[in-house]
Structure formats: C-alpha cells, structure tokens
Image 1 (cartoon, rainbow, N blue to C red):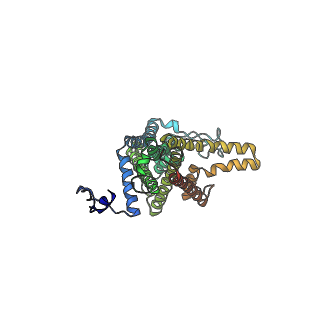
Image 2: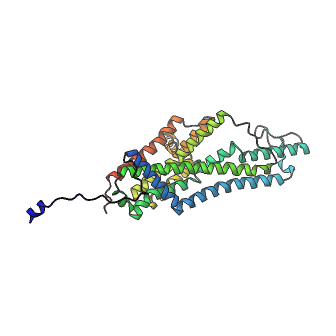
Length: 348
C-alpha cells in the first residue's frame, strides 16, 4: 500500500485565486509596520470611543474660553467706579504700587477700567491663549485623561476581548504589533493636541470683539514662531508620556481598566503630591525634608512645565534634567511593555 502511494505522481497544489482588488504590499519590516499603523488608526477612527473623546476635548477647551469671554463681558458692564485703585493711605505703596494718594477722577476710573479689560482680553488672544491651553491640557492635567483613556483602550482592549492571540498568529512579530500601537498613539496625541490648540485659539479670537478692541499681532515674529513650535514639541511628548504610562499598565494588567485607571491615578497623584511634598518638606526640614521635596522634580507634569518656563525665563529645573526624566519614563515604560509582550504566554 505504501509502495503504491509512493509511486503515484505528485501534483502541485494550485495557488488560491486572489481578488483583483486585493493588492499585496511589500513584506519588509518597515512596510509591514506602516500597514499595522494604518490598521490601528482605522480601528480608532471607526470606534465610537475615539469620537466621544474628540468631542469631549473640543467641548472642554471651548467651554474654558467661553467662560473667559463671559467674565470679560461681565467686566465690560461693570461701572468704572468698581475699578478704582486703592488709596495709599489704606494700602502701602510697597504692597500695591498702583495705589494713589488722592480721590480718583472719572477719567482715571475709565482709564483703570480700560487697563483691566485689556489685561483680561489678553487671555483670549495670542500669545496668552496658548499659555492657557498648555496649562489646561498638560500642566493641570484637565485634558490629559483623554489620551490616557485612548492609550489604555488601544492595548488593553486586545487583552480584554481576547484578540491578542489572533493578532499574534497573523505573521508580523509581537514587537511590530506593539510598535504600531505606539506610533498610532503618538499620531493621535499629536493630531489631538494640535486640534485642541487650534480650536482654543479660534474660539479666543471669536470672543475677542467683546472687549471692543482690535487684536494686536506685533508679537508675531520669527522668534515667537520658533518658541511656539518648541512649546508644541514639549506639550505633545508630555501627553505621549502619560499615554505610555497607560500602555504599560494596560499591558501589565492585560485589560483596558488596568491601563486607564492606573494612568489616571498616576496623573492625579502627581497633582496632589506636588504641593503636599512641598509642605511636608518645609515642615520636616533637614535631609529628609530635602529628599521629600525633591520627589516632585521627577514628575512628568513638573518637568513639562519646567521646559515651557525655560523658553522665556528660568525654571527651578534645567532643560537637561527635564529631558532626561521624560526620556526615562518613555524608555522604561516602552521597554517593559516590549519585554512583557515578547515573553508573555497568551495561549491561555
């Protein structure tokens, strides 16, 4: 029987016909990686969660500038007497240099009101509107949870739904799948932050006519433009660093909940511990106090803030220190995520 089977002529298996619309791409490492990135972006674009996060981010920044516009409109309707500078007999000049030693005239009251309105109107126009966006989105962390939720979902969802096993049988390596998610998060962080920034700037200028003044563009120089680009290049990696925190914990905990909850807890712990550690360090003093007081110097938000401040003035943290800290977060989180992805058994 076996001799008969061996004597039969072997027929080559015909290749399965391919649909003409299917185009097979290149199989080199970079081409496969780019196609995986496109796949991740397609999944994000089709998900309802991505659309909801986009709406929330834009709505939050619009609401903030709307509140600034309402505050400005309220001041416009206040009488000039409410803007009277204090008398030097009541407040020493060393405390308030704007105090006067006589009862203000109506012209002085009107001038004081105009100065106050101009100071508030500055927050609706460039360059001050950008500062508000930077602080709201990154430093104070009001919009940072958006990128944390997105990053926790993009990696944790594969474990929660069990699709991680299916992905790893498709051909590309595990590292390629993880790098594709990292690049997709980086693209989303960049596009999302730029969209929020643009919407905030446009909203500010839409409300600026409330002040009754004409916008001033004398600040628009090559130096200012360069500083603005550097500011964006600082804030976007700041967002991306928080996303890497969520991605690492999502990989470690094998779920969306682990990545999102851990990332948000990390964010709020930084916001809480920064003033708390400063207070405890001042109360304790000594070497222990110095050690506790130095802990916030290694928080993400504080180092992003230092980089922004060093563009125009001088911060307590140097650019070298801040860059090394942020790079450390990125290397540790991405490196451990890669190690877990390669070593982990996903058959169960």
